[in-house]
Image (cartoon, rainbow, N blue to C red; front, side, top):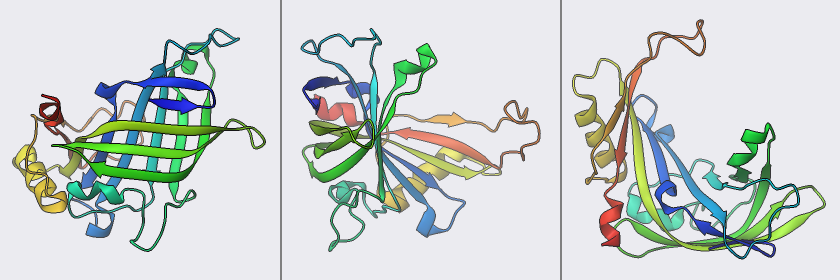
Length: 220
């Protein structure tokens, strides 16, 4: 459950979790990029918004340069060193209403996290408790609190385009980098040679391999 001010929101578990991007093409110090992404819809207790706009909130916590040699150590997520508490500046946090785009609007608010406690529960699941403030304006802030069981959901690995077996290489890199040995299938995104978004962009030099974790088995 997420509470913002007096309103409460229900977790959309299928879209929520810890995600990591791993690159086999960059120096080891920059090979990991972690994100905690939580999706919410209003609970039945929330009053209708005065403007009638629907809400699907995405809360994102993206700690600057967080690294871990083992995904099981996600309890340190957001803490840059053992002697340093959660830093509200270096943990890029926001809440966005994704449905506002349908109305040609933008609703993105900053979050100042005061405390974040993450504890492993079972399998790929972690209990996550966050306290902080959501700021709609510089002068108007609401208390924010969430308590959820969140999965480590997926690793995405980029491997060089000339790799003979991208999936095998991605699995080996994930095992070496964060000790992720179990996967629930894979999805490979091939390079787009057509340059549809930008005809002047350089050609892609990598495959992107998504490795979902078998976190759903933890719910059985």
